[in-house]
Image 1 (cartoon, helix red, strand yellow):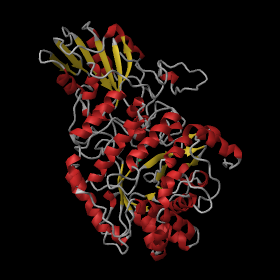
Image 2 (image 1 turned 45 degrees about the horizontal axis):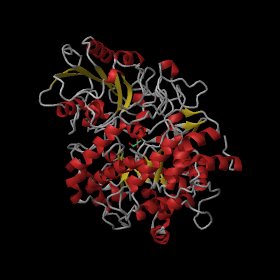
Image 3 (image 1 turned 60 degrees about the vertical axis):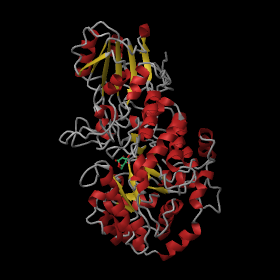
Image 4 (image 1 turned 90 degrees about the vertical axis):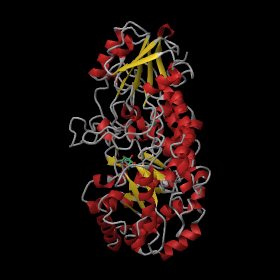
Length: 632
Ligand code: GLC
C-alpha cells in the first residue's frame, strides 16, 4: 500500500503531532524547514563535505557497518575495514566478566583500535541501556519503561535517562538503543514492558523526555549519549499469530513479536507514528526500524516508511540503524536484502556477524550501479552528522573518562531509582485500610517467589539478554535491594520478619506480604497466550490467605496479568511492574513513607479472553481502566 503524500496524509500527522509540520520532499536543509530539534545535527556540514571528499568507497562502507563486537575476527579489523560502529547486543559481553572494569577495558580497547585507521574517525559504541546500563554488574538498574509509564512523570524519566547516559559513558560506550517508543497494544507481547504504555500521548511525552535525558541540550556533552528511538514503526501493534516463530522455543515462540501490523494508514499514524515526530523534535540522533511489518511489508525494507515519511516528511536528519540482523528477514537472498534496505533508506546496518560479507556485498552493488553512490554519501553524511555533533571528529578522543567511575552505581543514582520505584507502583486494591502497614507489628511474614529474587525484580535485559536467570547459565548476581530486604530495613527493631517462598509459616503473623509474578524474559521469548499466574504463585497466595490476617499481594510483571481470582483473596494488591535493583521503594509504599501515586499505563484485563484490551475498543470493559490507581 503506497502512502500518499496528499493533504490527507499530512493533516492527520499535524493533528496527531502539532510539533512537527510534515515536510514533503527530500529534507535537504536549504530547501525545506528542518525541525528545530534536528538543526544541531546540521552544524558541521562543511567539515563533513570535506571529509566525505577524502573518503574512499571502502571507508564510506565501513562507516555504515556495525558488527557485534563478539564476532570480530580480530580487533584489528576495526581499522582494516574502517568500521564506524560496534555494538554489544544482549549477551555480547567482555570475555572475562561483566564487571565495570572489564566493560570499560573492552570498549576503550576498541576505541584505541579505531584510532589506527587512516582517517581516525571515532567509533560509536552501542548498547541496550534500556533501564540503566543494565549489561554491567554494579550499574543501577531502574524500573523498566512500563513502570516509568505508571509514574506519568516526564521530569523523572528525563533524570533516569540522564543518569543512565552518565553510567554508559563511564564504560566508554556512547550510544544507547533507547528509548523504545513503542505503543504496546496487546498485553501478550513479550516487549510490553519496554514501552511506556498503551496510550500514544503518554508515549509521546515520555519518549521525548527520555531523548532529552539521554542526549541533553548538546550532544557534544561528554556525559550524554546518542539516543535511538525504536522500533520504527508499529512494533507494539502486531496481530497475534503473525509473529516470529522461534524454532528453538516452539512453545514460547513469538506469536506477536516481529509480526505484522494490519492497520489503515491513518490509524498507524495516530497510534504508532506520532511518538517518532516528538522524538525527532526532541533531537533524537538515531532511529531503529522494526523487525515487524506493516500490511505485509517489512519496515526495514520500506522506502515509504524509512525515506518518504521519516526523512522527507518528518525531517529526520540523523541516521537509521537496522535491528539485529533484521535486514536478513527481507524477502530474497542476502544481496537483495542489502540492496532493498539501503535503497529504502537504511543508513547503518547492525549486521551483526558476517560483516565482511556485508561490506563485500554492498561494495559489489555500488560498483554494479545497483545502489546509488549518492545514497551511500547520504548515509555516510547522516552518520557523520551524529559523530560531529557528539564531538567525534577524526582524531577525537572517544574513550571513557576515568573520573566517571566514582559515580557508577552510586548511592545518589540509586536514590533516584528508588524514587522511580515508589512512583511506579499502582495500588489496585486496598480494603479495610490494609495499607499502609504499621512498622511496629510484632511479626510480618513475607512469602512468594519474588520476595527475595533480583531476576524477577529486574526482568529481561539485565546483565543477560533474557535477564539474570537463564537456563544453563549461572545466575548473575548484582548489587541491589530485594523487596524482602527493603521490608526488613523498614520495620521497627521490635518487629520480626519471617520469610518462605511457599507461604508456609504465615500462620500467627500479624500481616502477610506475598510477592509473585513473572520469570524474566525478553523479546519473542516473552510472548504468552496465557497471562495467568503460575501454580506456585497461586498456592503461595492461598497458603497465606489461610493465616487469616491482612494479606498484601505484590505483583512483579512486565505487563498486566490475569489475576482476577487472586485479587479476590487479597486485602491489598500492588502492581509493581519490574522495579529493578532498588526494591526498597516497594517498602516505602507498603509502610506509608510514600503514598501510592502510580496510574495504570495499560488497561488491566479481566480474563485472557479479553486480551488485547485498550482504550477506544468498541466494548471497553477491563477489570481496571487505563489510568486507574488508588492512594491511601
Ligand atoms: C534486539 C532488539 C533491539 C536491540 C538490538 C540490539 O534484537 O530488537 O531492541 O536494540 O537487538 O541488541
